[in-house]
Length: 202
Ligand code: GRF
Image (cartoon, rainbow, N blue to C red; front, side, top):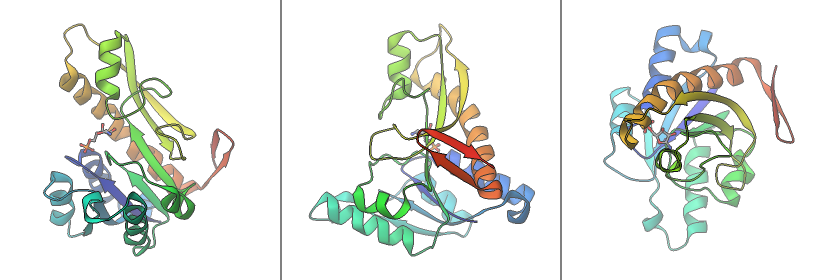
């Protein structure tokens, strides 16, 4: 299976996928990363991809006259690599209709909270501010909402009294990286069905 991974930041989830595939071999894992895309230049996620010798592309919203044109450009850039699965690993843009028409049902996102709690760009901060005692991470298929698609897997992380946002996010990411590697491998190896809000992995 061919994976395209989309990033916007440090790319440690991407790195976890690359390390797992390097360790187990693409054949045994069931997938290989064929390209990495981003919405901005100069991020560590792209540097990680370049160090791994992967194709990269950048689609900046500001380079396009409208959001729809950006969405079309992103769709074409991803499609050029003929992915079986697209993985958003810290990609901080909401894709549009064109992208979902092309990749819906095979576009996976990882979110650092237990959806449906704390969706959006500040899930870690919001859980902390709310006083949640446990939070965690969610791997889900992307639908036309924000962090609302069918849930594939979740991992629970306790919130500690002394936590600030970055300490809690780091502890979530330790669970999240393992969860993403495990889920992407199973989706790629076993195949899956999406039945309403239920995901069935064969
Ligand atoms: C992850 O926790 C992801 O869920 C969130 O941003 C973080 C990205 O981390 N959206 P990285 O870029 O993979 O290190």
